[in-house]
Amino acid sequence: MVLRETSQKERILHAAAELFARHGYHGVGMSQLEKAVGLQRGALYHHIGNKEALLYEISVSQLRVMVESAQKISAAFSDEEERIRALARAILRNIAEHRLEWTVHYRDFNALTGERLRDVLDLRAQYERAWLDAFHTGTAKGLFRSMADDVAFKGILGMFNYSYVWMDQSGRVSTDTIADMFCDIILSGIRPPQAVGGSSA
Image (cartoon, rainbow, N blue to C red; front, top):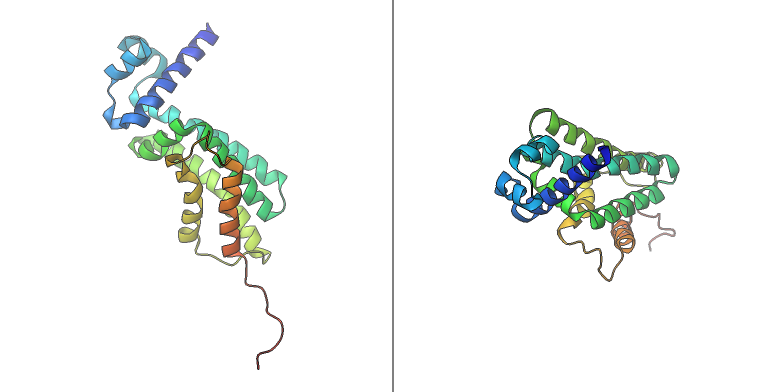
């Protein structure tokens, strides 16, 4: 019975993610979801609670995965550049595999309210701290130039996060290759300028 409940809920979540990604959270009514999963409203509410609960479950599903992944990467890599590359590869792989969930998350998570919204924002902050720690530690070691965190960091992370708009898992370029390309651009921009030897005439 537990396995059946779990399977039913996963089926509902996937159908909701497809509908929300295609039409937007506010553009989907419960009647559309009922039709997509073949359940009447009472049975649907039994499995998921309400429409906002669906949005919450979709929004946090991959955030939780990435927070755990980022924590493991942070513990595994002492070299800051390699840590950044590992974080980049992990997020792009996940986005490619879960575009529906990330599309719903980034477009509609602000429709959440109360504790659900606070939970999502806390998970996002936990994930971002793994990146910030790599940049801050690298800066403290003199590996990176000091940056205006609130501006530069948002731009850097945005390169990866918003790949859900164009990412194609079956594309000719692998997600790891794209991640490394992005990292080459980022790291070349934040490394301190090399000292130039010699003197001018």
